[in-house]
Image (tube, rainbow, N blue to C red; front, side, top):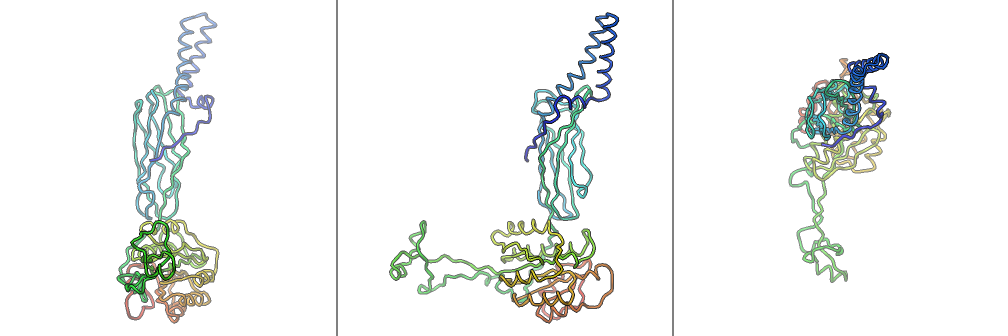
Length: 426
């Protein structure tokens, strides 16, 4: 829970602008009474007039000093959620002054896609006291949403003055694509990607087959390989096992011309969610996963703790948007420059030329699976089986068409099942 610091601009002149109708009435009545007392020579009326005029001014002074001694904080739990899931926002207000506050109006600014702007009325806070309130937000669309600034409206116990204090610190709520659990099927050529064959060691079992390396400061002397030391004339140690992870590339077609429609149920959002689900699934199965887009930009192969690696990829997919590219040549060049391993692609509309480019990507991978989202199908048109699917299948792809409402786990299971692939899947 991070503290929020307030802005001190404005001074007393700005604070005088916070006088309420009651405060202005008291001030006007006091000035009028003092003027009449001076004209009429009434000392008692002058004292009453001064009291009426000074009271709102004292309230302004006290409130002006008090508002900078009220601390606020915000906490997001969690700070990263999937689309359609809720996050809890907790607000805390601390009175660090030696005077009680009046009634407080607490208001937090949130984007309209997260819901209405939350407002809370807090009773007076005693010196050193704290008040906590919370609310929930939910986003249907992925993205990064700024939370704040937090605003606090203070009033004095007499209702003479109201001042607003703004807190400049913002927080960010990250809404990542929905991730669906996928069945543990074996895609073609995936044998080295999971199970006992997933890791291959550079060090072999036989004593004569040990691959030594030079001694480095800090190496355990028990690992010194004396036969190699005698042969090379310097200290040599046994090489540690260095497992080689199976590689996978998840290709996401983000071309704006390849998709139709907007909103949480649009084809592009299905493709982004599918790419997120495939990447997380492959990470959990021990793959080093590279995320690639049609423009050639990539998140390099991610290894290590699967949860941390998945977080990196999901953060990227949370803000991915349509590209201005019209072709897949940049993605093909990126695949040609590296090791694709298992290739899982999510394509939008493919004309014959782009289908041929996509078909050539298969030669950089032992196994390639494509999910094709034809915008004509997603807009309700009745179309025949696409020629692009046949081109992909002829090149060795496992190509599946995706219809609105299609279940990714079902399609994933279909991609890993032997037998012919249907022309239309839903």
